[in-house]
Image (cartoon, rainbow over all chains, first blue to last red; front, side, top):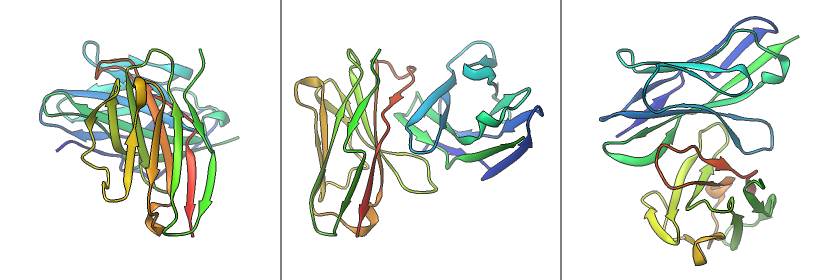
Amino acid sequence: AQSVAQPEDQVNVAEGNPLTVKCTYSVSGNPYLFWYVQYPNRGLQFLLKYITGDNLVKGSYGFEAEFNKSQTSFHLKKPSALVSDSALYFCAVRDMLRDYKLSFGAGTTVTVRA
Amino acid sequence: EAGVAQSPRYKIIEKRQSVAFWCNPISGHATLYWYQQILGQGPKLLIQFQNNGVVDDSQLPKDRFSAERLKGVDSTLKIQPAKLEDSAVYLCASSPAGAYNEQFFGPGTRLTVL
């Protein structure tokens, strides 16, 4: 069965510093990988996805993520964090060989201090 | 374009009562999803519709939960009778057909069962 792990419950960074949110996955076939962000009392918003092709994916609000097949990772990054990036971030995976269901990680709370 | 609409936003009921949630997806989106998000966890898929047919309901507690998507547009999710452990946010999402497409989420319904 497919699964996603977000090893850090919380990430704290200072504004202007680089931000990294970690994600590792487990699938039997090829993965489709997604990052979503959730602000308080709101639904999830799509940030970016990896389907195929270039391992470095660029998304909304200056975020990017790097697909690493050998390490089964898909870490989310932002070169210079903003206070407004403080939110809950979810990594999700679909195993295209076995299951079309999207499986989410438990989420990582990002706090960017001014 | 208009986003995914859900109602109500909040609902408080007592255990053993019934409750229903409504979702209106983005126009033209063939696929509709209902997720349950318990505090501190990532969303868990309850049911997935393709047009008005069920694609996956393997994690839907069918003894108490039911869902329908009449005419392939709006959808309702019902819980009857509710249990304390059903307290969660219920998220509706929609996407165009195709597993590589990102999902668009509504704001969710926060259910509290007393």
